[in-house]
Structure formats: structure tokens, C-alpha cells
Length: 179
Image: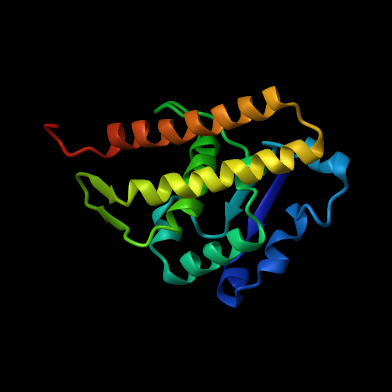
């Protein structure tokens, strides 16, 4: 079973976490449905096409920080896979929005895009701590849904490889000329 999850700009502006998470709230879903949604949910945010559309927007940053407090299971639900420069636009958006959720939790974030390059600066320790929390929550939900330790580990590895690929492809695409 595959699902699309849309968060609207109206939900972000209103801070309406309840309306945003209803389709993927473990408290509202049957256990069998939770099992089937592991890695199967495609997140889209109305009007957002990359991390900068969310993590550089103060209202979106606040919304996604609050969303994580209520719904910390992004690593469990969201459809992710490692990307390359030849990946489909949907695959690139999947990991970009996942990363945008994480980058909203950065206290010190700098993003600069010019016609020649893009630069992203953040606190690596803070980002690593956020990913650790995401992975722990995903493991707890996976265990409760009946996944084996090996399945949970494979999901954890897939998320890590996806995150690494985001940075690898990002560096290749956005590096300054002559680097």
C-alpha cells in the first residue's frame, strides 16, 4: 500500500498539526496498516520543491519543529532511497523534503544559492542528534508494528544511505566551478 501525504500552506500558516498528520498518525491507524506503511508514504508540501522552501521559511520551520514533537516517525513512514544525479524528480523530492524536515531543527542554518553554486552550513552534531532521535522513534514504531530487528536495521541503513546520497549529489550539483 502506497500513500501520498500532502501538507498544505494553510496548515502550515495555521500551525494545524492535527489536520496535517491525520493520514499518518499511528494513534489513528490500525496496527496492520502501520506495518504496511513502513517506507511507503510520499510526503509533499504544497509549494515546496526543495529544502530551502521549508528550512529557510520561519513559519515552516516552526511548523515542522512542532510537527516532530507530535509526529516523530518520519524515518519509519517516509519513502526514501539513495539518489544519484539520474534519479527521478520524485525520488529527489522525497529525500529533499525529508532533509528539509531535519534541517528545520537546526538552530544555526545558512543556505545561499547563486546562479553558480549553492552552500548549506549547519551544526553537524545537532543534525546527527536529530537523526538519532528519528531512527530511535522509527525503531520503536517498527518493533510495535511487528518488524524484526533485521528489518528495522535494514530500514535504518536505507535511511542513512539516502541521507548520505543527498549530500553527495548536492555537492556534485551545487559545488562552485573549479572545485
